[in-house]
Length: 370
Image 1 (cartoon, rainbow, N blue to C red):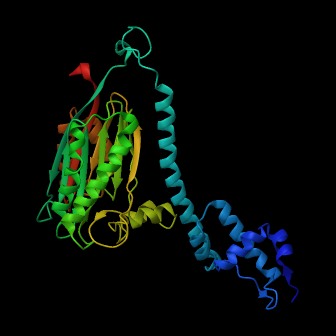
Image 2 (image 1 turned 90 degrees about the vertical axis):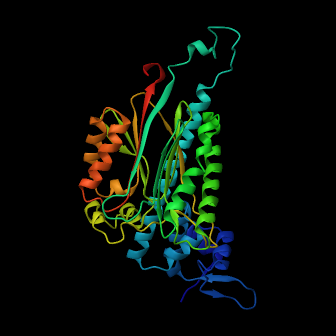
Image 3 (image 1 turned 135 degrees about the vertical axis):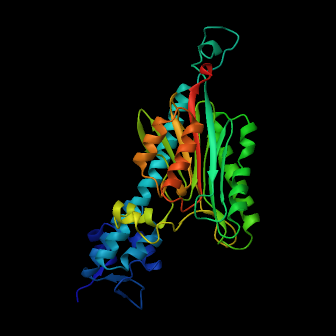
């Protein structure tokens, strides 16, 4: 069999000799033969296809560990793994894109303050109308569960829903929400709210770990929003959800961290199949106790707010049994957040109430309209 020197193979595969030596060390692409006297590497022409695959996956941004896994698979399974990797990448990119858009907008609107001269940039008299939250929180045991492991909270700045699981689910959800409540009393400039929120989430993680002890069978989801006065910062982990009703349309602004959602993202399930999947409640991320692995990172992002927006945070006791069209119509029809929360909990119980159900509904209104 005719062999290619490392130089010839490098030219044909468009991988540098340095990269080829690295991939040999990492067992991604081993040479077909190594000369015992000189240590010189030789490659078979048949290895070019694998070399090009490695190069393409590197250009795609796949980590070396992922490339090793893909290269060991048969083509159909490798294709599924690449599809799944790209779905995860798009989700991560969307989060970074939103943060970049916020930073551009925030820095573009920042002007030097000159409070001593009315009519100059930064004069408080030229500020736009102030917005404030009007809110309601409601949690119900439902019609089947013996106890309520959900926690729902709404304050002047903090909105939160947590859905506990395991034998200590109730104290776990309560601990997670309690760890965020101090933000109700903190000054929250939009430019630093994400840092404050990430610190608060670390506190929530530690609080849940203290409650749950050494087992990861006890834990909670957490979906929360913090109002800065101009924007809403969102933190999310698990399968509780946040929705936005704007202009008559309902938009889900969180992404479920579940096995079924990942299969949907990868194209391995249709939405219709997902609703009946036996593992639809299996979480991939949550705040839990125990375990030596690092705690999974929640989604943290910022949302621009408009007067007239209505937000819903809910546990899956609502979203799993009430269709989104019904949620939209119920939110749109209710005149107040309290009325909306009561109607949504009622709709979940009318659908059998198989789980605890919690809702936080908040409206953004002009402060002058109170």
